Amino acid sequence: MSKPLKIAVAGLGTVGAGVIKMIQTHGDLLARRAGRPLEIVAVSARSKGKDRGVDLSNYAWEDDPVALAKRDDVDLFVEVMGGEDGPAKASCEAALAAGKHVVTANKAMLALHGQPMAELAESTGAALRFEAAVAGGIPIVKALTEGLAGNGIARVMGVMNGTCNYILTKMENTGASYDDVLKEAQALGYAEAEPTVDVGGIDAAHKLSLLAATAFGTRVDFGKVEIEGIQRITLQDIKNAADMGYKIKLLGVAQQNEDGIEQRMQPCLVPTASPLGQLEGVSNMVVVEGDFIGQTVYQGPGAGEGPTASAILGDIMDIARGLIIPAFGQPAAGLAQPNSSSKGSDAAYYLRFSLTDAPGTLAKLASILGAHDVSINRMHQYGHNGKTAPLVIVTHTTPRAALDTALAEICALSASLAEPVALRIESL
Ligand code: NAP
Ligand code: HSE
Image (cartoon, rainbow, N blue to C red; front, side):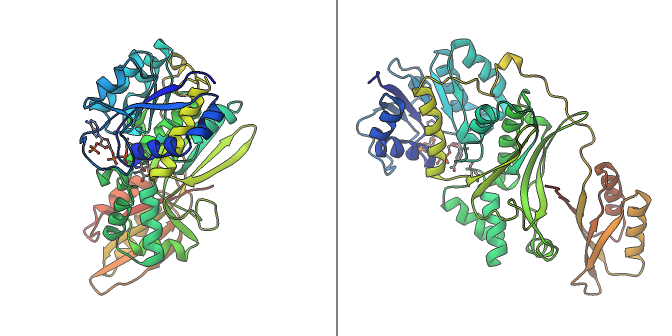
């Protein structure tokens, strides 16, 4: 058997402990499959004494992850500390500069620094791999860079944040409050250290920007992702959507429009009967549309110790076998500067207004929508009490700009008591 692949692991939390467990559990299996043993040589975290549920006694300890990355006895550096800058970035750069392979689950870091890091990796002949950074255990980066490599990609979309899908489906299924379900997701190890990164859509937007770069051969452009979180979604919205045959999902879409790439991460309505509508709990789903293959759908657990470790091991195994693929599926220097689509694609919308319950209010609102060519498909007023009147409207397909202008005018009405909620109804 060939010489071992020597591995360092920086970060011993949910993901790092999972990686170590997997290598310890499947050592023989992995060695047979790779044709060489995988050997963890050293680890790092903040607190040396902490019990992490895994035996670390055979590994050297480094307090400093940069020193860990530079060790002479390390071939491959696993970064699972998190954080877009700081020790994560410094240690990955140190490893790549020294020609050591890097496997990371850190979408925040790559969404912001993916291009220069990919260039650095290629300059030293090292691999930079990030399967675990997108959609947890689903091998979607591999699907795009390998299995679908012959296709032009038109659209890639999906549910890519386990915490948000867990919250939305658990609220619907149990009627539990948003806060209680978020606490559960944190206890189960799904959520990011700062929960607004999850519920605000930022974590999923990081992932979408990485998929868009991989799918369209462009430089990662996180700044151009339109982002809206799930914080304003109420149980009533979930029920209203269900009554109309829809589910609310935090959906990411990256698509090639005529004038450039559209990237958005926002709560959307999807048909209940669709695969995305059926997605429950912490699961993720990614849908890829290729010009020769048509539509393909990938589903699996999107977060947690086991699924994330599984994705990391997939990358490690490739490297152990000598498969060095450019980070975004093509040499970094050839990745194009992306053009952003200026107007976005048209869609129907679910709108929820909170209005004063007074004569003429509905007429004013309807006339503003009409003046901007926004056509009403269905309407439902509920729970009005003489003072306030929640109103739900579903529009016909409309250009986004026209809807935005109409909503701004409605918002300025004295009868408007809160900013309207507008959720796109995604065509699948
Ligand atoms: P976590 O449980 O909070 O673990 C983070 C680990 O990094 C801890 O062991 C911590 O040390 C260590 N660490 C933090 N700062 C450090 C520093 N300055 N120097 C050395 N060690 C440091 O986080 P996680 O959930 O495993 O996530 C790790 C990464 O994976 C993040 O990038 C996250 O976005 C990504 N990810 C997570 C999941 C998931 O389901 N959890 C899924 C996909 C991707 P101490 O333990 O000593 O404090
Ligand atoms: N916090 C993330 C989620 C972890 O909930 O999906 C996986 O990236």
